[in-house]
Amino acid sequence: MNLMGGKISGTVLLTGVTGGLGAELLPRLLRRHPDCEVAALTRGGTPRQAQDRLEAALDFARLGPEERARVSLLHGDVSHPRFGLSDADWRALASRVGRVFHLAASVDFDLPLAESRAANVDSAREVLAFCGEAARGMRDFRLNYVSTAYVSGRRRGRLMEDELYLGQTFCNGYEQSKFEAEQLVRQAAARLPLTIYRPSQIIGESSEGRIRKFFGYYEFLKLAERGRMPVLPADPLARPDLVPADYVCEAMLHFDADPGAVGRCYHLTAGLARSLSFERIFSQMYRELAARRPDGKGPAKPRMFRPEELEWMASPEELRRFHLSPLKLLLRTYRAYLESERDFDCEATQASLARAGIALPDIESALRLSAGYALGARFGQTGRAGAARSGAARQPA
Image 1 (tube, rainbow, N blue to C red):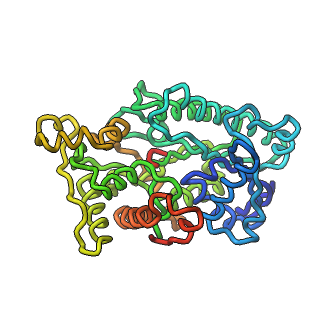
Image 2: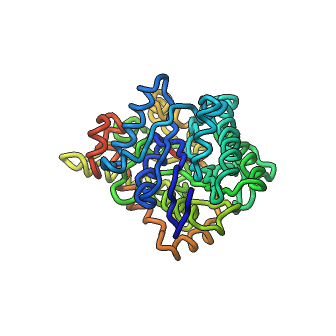
Image 3: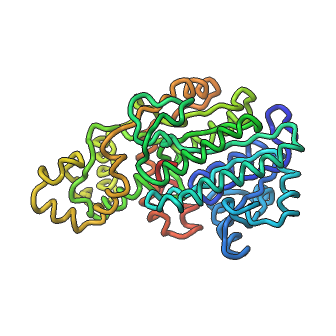
């Protein structure tokens, strides 16, 4: 691995290429570093299935033939010992990798803790073992590890980048498993050059709203489109932290090239001052739905209550429809994120990125484009090629 003038020349190991963030990072990585090659670690029951999953991600990334030729399939599972590779193949891979971007994670909030740990903690452990082997032979080795801002769990107040465990409890197994995984990574920082990134809830990139995975915000959008949101149990004034995928990817590539970022942790978040309230977000959502109807009349916007007020503020008919709606199940998953807001410290990180020409996009514009893309792509149901061509036509990460 050579790093001359900030350009990577050699092999980069990328996990999570088929996810919402990985498919956005891949083309940027290839174009930023035209002399690098990417080994994309991809799961699949068979090599053919893994190849199909990778091809779908390459289609989404709109890679040209020369760029696609620089991406190779590495069929395996990041959470398995040695990624499921033979000892010889694992060592051969380590001998030529000088950069690792570990983005793979299970973001299923409803998984039992043991299953979340198997996906997120075990994968971090295996990546760190691989990095330890790879770093022996690479002078400029770096690990870029994607955590989540929600390792803060149920803590409130100002949430700082250099903090991890302050006695917090967690909203779900996802948060706890990512917290435990970040603990392992921080412990490894004494022996490995690495940088930790904590994105908040990722939405589509800011120019067209494109994204491969539709979690969080998009699940509410889907119910709204179908008229299945009779009420909305959320604090109307709370400001969820949403961040466009392109901002996260550009930030990672910038800090990867900065020697001063080694050993650091960055909140790749919007921050409260630039975040929109639930009232504003859902008002925009329903305006977008109305704009897509020939008559300009979208589904009726639901009344919004704080979750704890629902049972005594909603009408009997609203309650009846709520209890029959898929929204009730969705609320079980996301209630903790609807009833309060988190204050992630990110001003210094945003200022550093702005000096490099990487500004946080306008969140309201990014949300409008994200909604339009999701609706046009039928939330990923239009097919691989159709979604990749549709232009402007999920989630904590």
